Length: 328
Image (cartoon, rainbow, N blue to C red; front, side):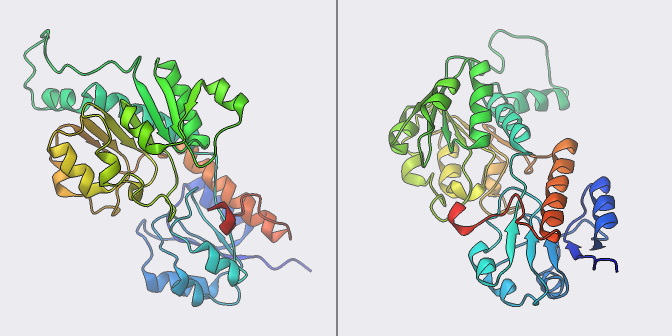
């Protein structure tokens, strides 16, 4: 007798090759259009499915998990961050949670360097001049930025992505410093030629560029609050390709507008798509629409991880990328 096929609901459109493979392996309900599910649609999906495949645009809190049907046994998240899922409540209900770590490391680190260069070398300002047709030719003092080589880079969060940023920054001649919950092993620290700071305050005060590469957890919410942002040097730059909630966006906007910070490069925002309008008006800020992980290769690899997690679970084993509350 053939084995019962798992019922899987996918909440957003995924790359076609991923959707096709999911359909071959499982009884899949795919999204028709590329819009986030409503809360009511999510609740219905969680009542009917064995497995839910959500993305970071789906807020799966304890109330939604409380409405889940008895069938739901796995939330196989399409993405590395799981701050939109109440993992502890899911665990209490006997629902496993998995994610897709590692595959977006290089893509996000590339974007971090792109933002550092864009802000320090004033690339968007040069682009705007060209697009307006205002360029009058080369001039010795036009659009002068700063050299990245020799600058001190402070990395907040030295996990996979932080370390990938460190390797890239070193190739550009930057001095790498970092603050992390736990200090790296001595051999890793040596290989990265990175200086550890136990005090985030002290590191923040001495850096030329600060890169946010830590996840959003209750302990990192507004880690860069108004007080800590004010410790930064006036000619320093801050870059965030992690989670918007780590920075107090209003405080950052005020400081940038007042010239108390040299610039910022942001790919993520505290309130999702509701970006502070004053932030959008500032010339010393480069804003991107959460593109850090947006490569074709990365998106397909994320899908492959989701499929492996579901397949392993279906075969009666622990998903390789299972997330447990103690990890958060």
